[in-house]
Image 1: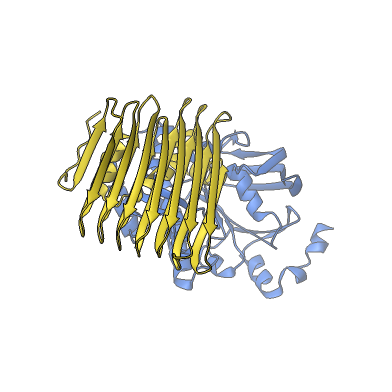
Image 2 (image 1 turned 120 degrees about the vertical axis):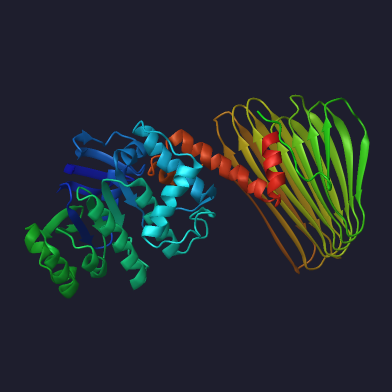
Length: 253
Length: 255
């Protein structure tokens, strides 16, 4: 599904990703861990097409297409979704209107018939009911005055409605209580169960989310490149020893 | 397009000016009454408005400036005790406006919300003078969306006199320049003669927020559409100040 080769990314002239390589196949769950500043968020921003990320060399191939020159909206409509660590507040844009516009943008891109308000509300209610999400956020401005937990819920709602193939989660568990993390995992696991080709790339500092969404691969990122890859046991080892005692320098050498 | 209709006209006066009318018109709201007045300026006019709000009354005054030629309006306002004057300006064409308000009564309030939304070579000027002589409130806010070769000049001048302790005086202007040729000049000015008050003034000028555009794009919305959504959001913030949904939709239809 996703193949990243020799990717070099700068932000404001500073090199963040350094000959980065990663391949994610259909249906795989990858977890990305690393110290602050290692380049985790830069990676997912570069994949989604953030304006700050300057790709100086390398390729990102998604479903056979090289996407580094594509606009963020085209990438999204191709099936890439990034759940943001701190989603921006957009006052004045009604959340429900925004969700419908986004759903219809994808339908237009895929040359499908767009939904009218009734059709959209029907799908929305189905998703809310299935995952026991409340509809209190819909009438408000997009993320406007939302608590940290409400912002994450809204990201999940977007994820459910847009139904992407590649789901990137940038610390979706940060600031959430145990029950909220369970809700996140329920949504993600539900989506994987519905479509086993969906792939996940999740950034997390904590083991709790990975207990609930078991990764096939765990990568440790340091200085802009992956220095160690393992299975879930690597996350457990990291939790026990910390980055400093994981022997990462030996791996690099 | 279907002509907008306002369901509840009982408390609303709607004036549409299409002809030359160089006059002085006074609107007075009696004690404890609430009135909404909408002036639709659709011609090259030069006139004076006297807005008088008696004690405990509220006047919601709305001006829609859509004359292709430049209208010129002078407002002189008087606000009674515990009375409120809410003014909304919506300018999509050229106009020159002077707004003078003396807040001489205790707990009188002046709220101004302006939306200057221009294209082509439209020019709008506002000169807003407020004089607090008693404990009172003035809250003056403008949002300016300027495209093409349009320009706006905005002077906000508020004095808080020694007799107006515990007053509140706020001025704010937010400008989005949508083209390289558009121009804005904003002068917020507060003259404070006492220590006991709340006051602030500020003016910003810039482009649409890039993070917001990116966020909308990351959900599949094209950049052009994202920008339109954000501009409409800024417009909606001004419409939201009208409170009444029926009135909001009516005005959106007119503008």
